[in-house]
Image (cartoon, rainbow, N blue to C red; front, side, top):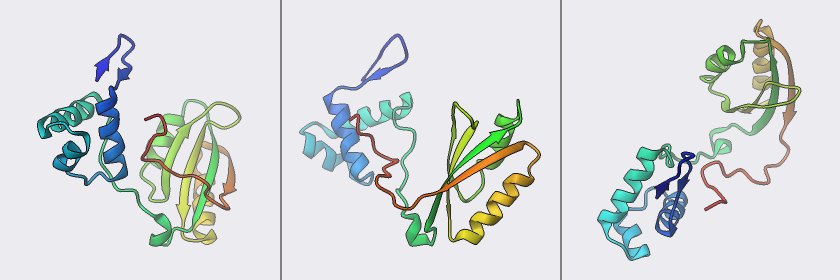
Length: 158
């Protein structure tokens, strides 16, 4: 792992292979990774530690199947926020249990939310609460019919 002058981190083949393994199953032990890659356990420990400290690895977390928990409806919601209020609104919305992603975007809307709901009643309540907020000018909601790819924890660039 090498940091360039632009703060872009370059990974070598060992780092990339470590990431591929822990991305598949974060519970894989350092010993198992070392055997797979034919390097020492200490090297695996040091490499992962460096990737955590540099921010390449932000956190270790499970990939949750929201449908198994009853959240069968996924929505994409465009939100137009009054000028200068976007950061305040995002900080408040960040903690909503239904919101799994918030993205600042360019174009007609200021942000897009990815949110999951148990049913349309929950979605309806959520949208009506959003529209009560004086910071919100407009929303645009799309319901996901079929998930073709949703692999938030992994990266195809590895």
